[in-house]
Length: 338
Image (cartoon, rainbow, N blue to C red):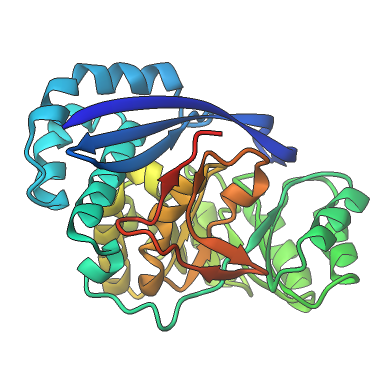
């Protein structure tokens, strides 16, 4: 097996702004595992908030190159377990290898991963479309550009309630708001009372992960459900979210791939937590991996590839929020290298 690394700069269609970041491009690393005519692909993006650079991921992968290339891929679980000691220091790099291994394994078997797992895709959630922070007219314009049934609205400004009020004038679609740690407990409780009147379904990560006392108050008093994101990074965080949140948002790159994500989903169900999987700004390689988990989810946010103008791959199609799964085997990704 050969390890091949591809680096791309993804161009965003619009400047993407959230409470703690703003960008017009996104660096990404595509990991390819090539074995006798079959290629599996995984993805990891650079991320300032989590201190992940392309260079740091490449360094980890190059150090582990011998193990990655010489470990037999009997199945993704045993492959993941064998490589975890050398990749766990960088969950983004670990995710890219985990997803590439799943993709390669499925392509060799001639089946999509969800089918190998025994999952049915008869009922899957629709995805939301993300509206980044901008002027209100620009946010309205972005929303009209994609008339979808669900929107994730990024907030964390001095006019958050005004934003939702104005956007609501232009659509009856469901709103989900994501404050990315920008609020206090008092902000959250006050905003939630107004948002409930305006058709908001839930609030994602309103407080800093360190504000445990604040989240206890929000969990008990908020009129809307609250979903963890920055508070739920890796597997052990699921238990920590119990009693603080009503659900969790799993990101494959943050937790380390499909295998830990499935364990997190299983544990969340045991704790009666709602489950969402979200994306970064990423290509269809990463989005394809998320699509394999759809039958296990309550909510999904997998619009990352629609936010960019130069997708480096093909995968599932998103049609007004409806997800049309790829006909490719494995995760469904095919690298085009634009």
